[in-house]
Every structure is written in C-alpha cells, then in structure tokens.
Length: 346
Image 1: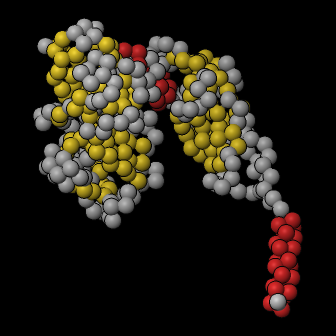
Image 2 (image 1 turned 90 degrees about the horizontal axis):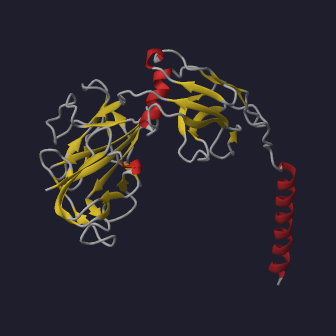
Image 3 (image 1 turned 135 degrees about the vertical axis):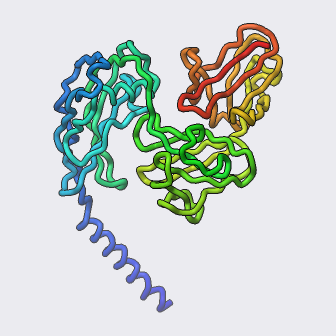
C-alpha cells in the first residue's frame, strides 16, 4: 500500500509537468502569406512560333512566402490544364529565388507536346507556385493564374539515358536501348527487353561510359560508377530513374490483351509474347467487334489505352475500338519514346 501512495503523486506531478511544458512551448510556427504570382498576369494568350523557339517566353515572378520564421524556402512553378486542380501538375522550374526566367518558347512547346497537348490548338492552362521549407510543414500555395497557350507542331527530342548491359553487348552508344525524360524534369522511364535471366546493366548519361550509374547493395539508390544492376527473369522491364535524387525502380511486365473483343472478355487476359527481334509484345488471335486494352501482370495497376483514338498510348487511356470480327495481329510498341500500337487484320 505504501508503494501506491508514493507512485501516484509522482505520476500526477509528471502529468502536471508535461502539461505545463506543452502549454509553455505551444505552437511555435504560424504560417503567413502564400506567394502571389506577379507576372504574367491572368488572361494572357501565347501563340508559340517555331521561329521564336530560342526566345524567352516571359518572366514568371512572384512574391516571397512567409512561414513565420527565417528559413530557406524552395519554390516550384507548376502548370496544368484549367479545372484539373493540378492533379497532373508539370514542374516548370525549381528555385530558391522569386522567379523562373529561362522558359523559352521551344522549351514550353516541347513540354506541352510531350504531355500530350495537341499542336495548333489553344490550351487553357493555369500556373501556380508551391513554397516549401520542410516535409513536416504544410506548403504555402499561390492562387492559380490562367493563360492560353497554343503550341506548334514539332518533333520532340527527349532527354535520354542509355541502358548498356549484357543484353546488348555493353554498348552505351546503342540508341535502341534507352529510356526517356518526357517532361525534361530529371525523371526517366522506358521499357527494355532482357532476353535472358539475370541480365546485368547500368545507366549512362550519354553514349559513353564517362558518366555512368549502378546500384551498390541493390537498394534502389544509384551511385556513380558503382555495381551493375541485375534484372530477374527474362522479359520486358519498365525502368524508372530519378536523377534528382538518384533512385531507380525496375518492374517486370508480362503483357496481355483484354476487352470485349477478346475470347476472355474483360475477365481474363490473352497473354502476349515478346518478339525477339523487336523486343515488343505481340499476339495473333481471333477478335470480335468491340474494344480492347493492354495491361501488365494480369492487373489494372499498369494498363494502356488510346485516348482520342490517335494511335498514341496513354496510361489508363480509353478503350481501343475493334470495328469488325476477324483474325488480328496486335503489336504493343513500347521500346520507343512515344508508346504506340499496331492493329493488323490478317
């Protein structure tokens, strides 16, 4: 009984002290003003012209954010389609300053085309600035500013990483084994066919070994000049690389055809096989009039469709129409910068 009377007062004192401490410390961070975009003003209309591709489009400027204390602030200038709530935001530039002034006409044109915006069609867009100091502190976000931009038709040349390895003779100059940064933002993705189990490879920045990356410890972190990366079972792999934080992911993909046109309907995939010569999945089978899609690993997490029925594939895109019954050869072309497909009636 004596122990009870000793411990309980101690507990009470501990609780009291803790409560006092919390009251004294209290919230130490009071968020202030979010940044405000000062230029361009809302409602601007830009019609991009190839003759001006090397000219600066406009300066993007904003006021500083106020987090309530002195801290280094990172600003991310973002762009998206009006009404999309920045669900597919594209970063136009990261800075610790209050402006991004290196957006040329050609750079913005390439960004829009790479993101799937059609050429010679005005796109209603909006920009915003996201200010951050820490992942433990809420970001301060500016009000969006709207603008109209009309891109011109051009061939998009994406930044690329070479993928030399045992699958292609360790040749960094081989342009058939590369992955691409479609938004020119340091993030690269592509599909590579490894014809044998446990293939080894690395990434090179350019067609030489001068700048190359491997993964010592196979922990998903890239290091310059380090160990070869090892794939698993032979097949087509989706390779993703983030050069901003030097990380990478490899994902084995076994592709199938699914849809109301196929023998299995929407319930089961028709397995595709890899064409050894092209490195792309393909299948020949009887189809009925209806719709199809491509998906990997018997799951919807990774699937392709064709929004706008223009022959270009998009992740999670619209179903692809098959007009009439017949025997078809379907090719999934994913070892290029732009993912496409081919439907041939035999």
